[in-house]
Length: 106
Image 1 (cartoon, rainbow, N blue to C red):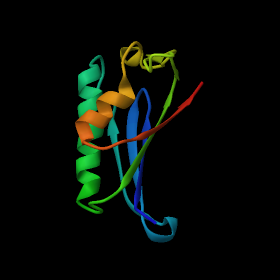
Image 2 (image 1 turned 90 degrees about the vertical axis):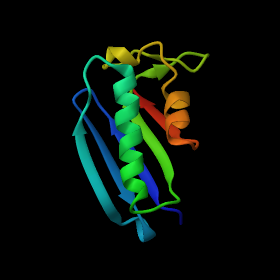
Image 3 (image 1 turned 45 degrees about the vertical axis):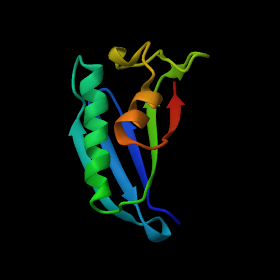
Image 4 (image 1 turned 180 degrees about the vertical axis):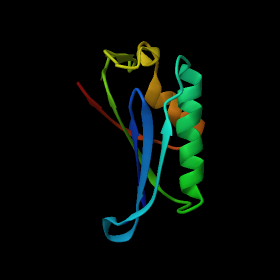
């Protein structure tokens, strides 16, 4: 199984968890969510991915965050309002240079 990085994007914190062989936690990091700047949030998540890659170079990435998507793939109904109207999945993929899976919750 390829190592898997899960990123929980919330209004107050971003937490990243890397699971390795057998689903075991191999690394975890929690940071404050940048306030008022979409670009800073994307950069913070990219930084967490870079840090996780020092523990596992080839990993899959998944993001979970409150909200939903428009048919055009733009975020809506987000607690962190700076995410609304933004293509979060696409922008994070561009920042980290690989596909990411994204799960949204209300």
